[in-house]
Amino acid sequence: MPWDDRFEALLRAALPYLSPDEPLPPDAELIDLGIDSMAAVELLSTLEQAYDVRFPDDSLHRETFRTAATLWSVLSRQLSREPTL
Image (cartoon, rainbow, N blue to C red; front, side, top):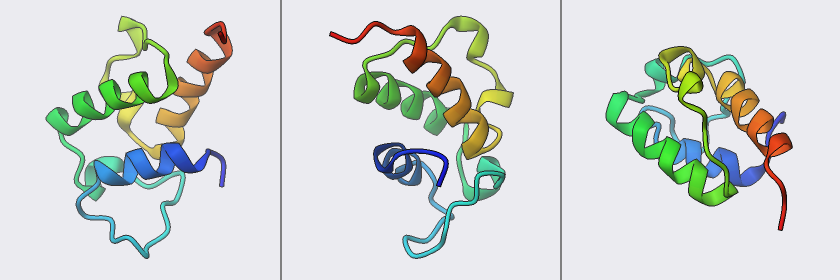
């Protein structure tokens, strides 16, 4: 799995069409798993709070939320930029 358990749990909560026992492939289209624009905004806020990061405005577009892998990639970049306290 290319991401941590916390990310997967938060993402799964935003994906109503993904059953709890079904694997979450990195390249699965999130829209096909039920994420919509409102869920994406809520997920973004949840990820920012959980990881204590801020997503830059230029990452707030549909491509960021295309797959689990693309979202994790954007989050990982922010984690590497954010100072830890």
